[in-house]
Length: 112
Image 1: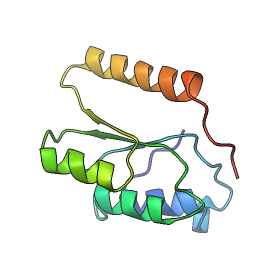
Image 2: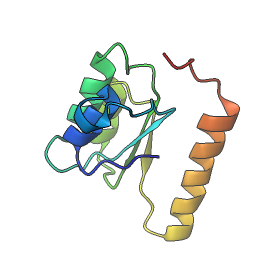
Image 3: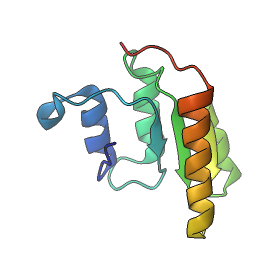
Image 4: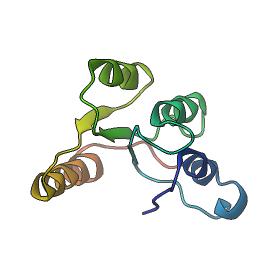
């Protein structure tokens, strides 16, 4: 698992650039819309425009409940959208559901 400090670093990691040249391709991307620098929506756009990255499922996990953020996330290619819960136990339940569904139930495309 890799946690990027901002959108630019996340994109460099995904593209295996610079210090991330040996990074492994993730099975899924958990994306917060509120990233420093490049926004989560900008990063989502870049991921889905890149032929090497677009098949990686992107799960948006955001504090935003705004319909505009939900709609734009799906328009840009997000595979699902979750609102961040305020309670830790709820967050753990969502994380477990994401793991179970995306890593054990669905069939993901083979790694390139």
